[in-house]
Image (tube, rainbow, N blue to C red):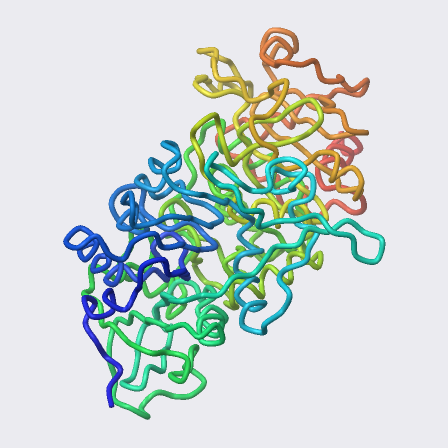
Length: 535
């Protein structure tokens, strides 16, 4: 008997008060067809109501898709996720204190599905210690009506750990490319695999149901077993989506390169415009060494990948994303999550296993606020919420962390003759006395001995003994006027303060190869040393 049903019929299977969990990243993996039907049903009948919605990664397109369909007062009672900035209606409900909300580390949530599937005690990890997720700070609670403790502090073998409490999954929303009539599901055209398999197992072993959206339907027993990523035994019902409701990414319906079907020439990837953001990406790339495995965050960090390609050094390192991609060049902007010319794709939760075991040599991530103690905030600004995504998992476990961002917000700059000139002073300060929320704990990093850099267009800071130290200044920049006077605290200025490499402030660079290949120690330091010796 075929498991294929309509989206409307699928929506009717979600009961009031159900815990609904989804596998998603942006619109990748998201069952948009089913979500539309759930929204229509609620607007017509008021049901389902008071559901708990759970997803590890962000879900939406900053407009009307994704979990925005579920962002109606009364439909969702509780939101548990890693990031929600792409869903305007969910943000509105949070800011108006209309729903309970927990913003937890992305990796913890996707690993929770395996814990639930195996009836484990929960997730026990150091991830989140010292951040707002730590119950000694906020416990991951975002709205004032959020009362239940989902995170607790425990001690295991003499070490502090956080315990994340599991919960039964009533409905799992997953997605694939082709489903057969028995529900066997492939993911051939998906940009990432995500966590559909462990989530389906979590729902089934909780006594719940699994609703799978697919692009196409095939007859029974026609799929190669090694192509099937979720066995039909774990799938209760299949919904075949309209093409427009099965987006590969937030902006792309289908690109065979993002699915891994074809390899593309690197020169088709758009170049990064020559501006101060490119300068930051170049300086960050100088921290690379041969053979490094790295992760790139969104925003300025994702420009590092294109910089590496432009400099002809993509062969020297392995770029990964937390969504499970190894190698190639990560897609940026609204295509983030997928990659061009990837070597391999693994499941979301497995990638976090690798990261949390120390697999990353360097993590390049963004910064929004930094304080004197090296704490960083990327998750909340006053009433505006975003969530940490995989930021906490990644930054607390990488061997080295490099934060990349503009020195202020709202500034304007000109690059002339290898120098930086500020034409408009930015009024939004990023280096503040105290961050609005602790997403990265400087104290935690210091206890672990993790090297930390903060790279901006005006200068480079390190974290030394819990204090920010200015170690490099951009050519053309005035120390007092352009840096120190624009900070809410006074960092220590290194006695060996040096000028950032002037060549990265010019339209054409060509020096990354020499920097990466510099023998011994750190790349940027040895690049400077090798230049001095050559001179």
